[in-house]
View: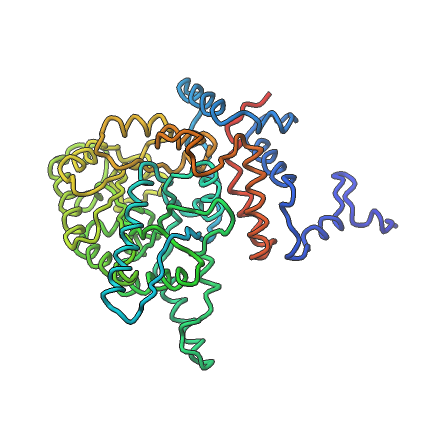
Length: 484
């Protein structure tokens, strides 16, 4: 008969299940990240999962190279074709909320005077437009199940200037939750103004620890102008209660996912109906009380009207394809609301069973379309997205096309975020002495600072539910390390 001491212990593996159970039932007020121990194991696990032969090595040797040393080494390996920036694109990240507080919005102090209200609204929008223009030079692309508030906090610790995009948030979710909670409050005798926003915070709230999120854009997905209006009103409700303060709102016209562009009839499918897009952005503008810049992320077109194959696509008249893109830009911008476009320089293949990964790789890139837009529409601002994976690539594209407002990078950020440690110096021309953010000198310091964000999150939310999201945000820091 087994004794009590060995009853719950697997002798072959040496696992004490009682101890594991105790750890998994910690109270919410227990700080999971009061040291960097867990992040250390996260780093070790990342190395183990991506190495055929794992050997122990000193943690200090993993995290201590300076930002400059790391970027130089990373650039050398990239040039030697020893590193694939998309190697970790298949990592399965679960969806989590989007978020953060920028604390720059002005408050209207004279609600009785309509002209003063309009002046304050214009002032707020102008401030946000100025901030947006400054930060656009490099953007973190919106990516479902990747760019949650934890990863955006990581990026902000690395760069004080990079423009951050949230995951796409479905407008119908926001509008439904807002209406539902307003109705519940009215049933309880309230006026509906102070409704429960806890569920909406899952999607919209931003982190509360320094460095604050700063320049950031909330991406919304939808095709119903009424629902988009209500979704933007939900955003403004949370803004007034200091749960979020985004620099701009962005309409997703580029996602080719079958769930979005197929069943959802939005995302890249909207490119085939530019008049609807114009109506949607007008609704977003009104729903945000005309205080938020509205931007559009799109592709250069879709495969509407033909069956995509490489031969079929090569046979298409490029001038006709470019004319359709120009028509989209002109129609969407005709109301004077949208002047800022982020363009993925590929078409979206919607007529075949292409996965989002296929749509990122199979259709050829046509950077020349975006460069032509820059030259022919100087009154608008354009950012280039697609196929750019390093600071060197981004700097080259910006130098080659001086009128280009910015570069948008996605997968490379998530697979190796520390390779962008010199972003502010290389892209924004900022030296360390003039930086507004005290940036970590190495990954050890970054993990220590990230622990403060993790502690704050665990105090606000259920630790057992949120820990996996917190740790996922830092797995990429050690992905490409060479192993002995």
